[in-house]
Length: 395
Image (tube, rainbow, N blue to C red):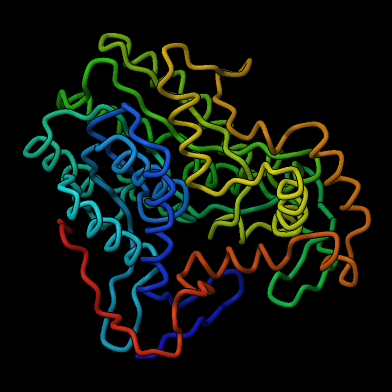
């Protein structure tokens, strides 16, 4: 079939297998260009099919010849309907990993569930014995609690009072004012239940109970802080409460790992175009301006560059550098004072007529469609593609 991008709001409901493969190959090439770095050798990535999770799996496999297991929840293809992009990403990753003789197996299902946890533990026992690194990179809007059976839905709302600011419809380039009503207490609780650290802790506890964690084991989860510009809707909003919980959970997990000299970290990463960030009001406009400034300063990074820097300059050093809250800060370039001052200046100027010159909306749109395998000039999108792509070692 000929596959074209079809969007619905902030998501693309189609994806292109060859384009997704190109995205994965580009990331693999980047990691290979940096040479081999000895990090963890047996790696579990929870949320492994897109964004930072996919980049973590690629960096582990092709930067350290690691054996990897990836867990994710993606839609498979059917005749005449494409799979989700994460499905095609994983198929491409496994194909390349197997070509190089690397162990790579994948599990598709709800990572919040006991069933998928048990399936993953069984695979680790049978194939790898123990795990050296767990990357926790889930980005789901919904979680059915495995103990209570309650279905929790996250929300993106301010706390205490309504929030009004600029945003951009990145499809049209229209800059407009948006107002978001404040949340109620139940919405905070639900967002923390979905996006906080409880499930991360459940995974680590389950693995440790079965003696599947190696000595000197590490685990890392990903977070974001961002600037004052976005804090009302992000860090001081419902999602910020969830990130606070995630970050506090790192200390609790670390305490539980002392007997194996293990450690849990939260890495605060930079703002990037992801399926998740595209859904958050205000963030697309902020990223459009940020990209312009960071590119002009030679500081722009994508997911793969961020994770490579995390692995080689932070997470696997003998002394891991952290901030006063115990967090790894790989958002340091984004949060540089000169970068933020310039973004704030541009924010005041941002309008529908000025954004094309003062921001990088085209870069934002390109990266958005790249997430789904589109807008790669090397791909002939007028050619028919086979949507029925399998993941070689799907369990």
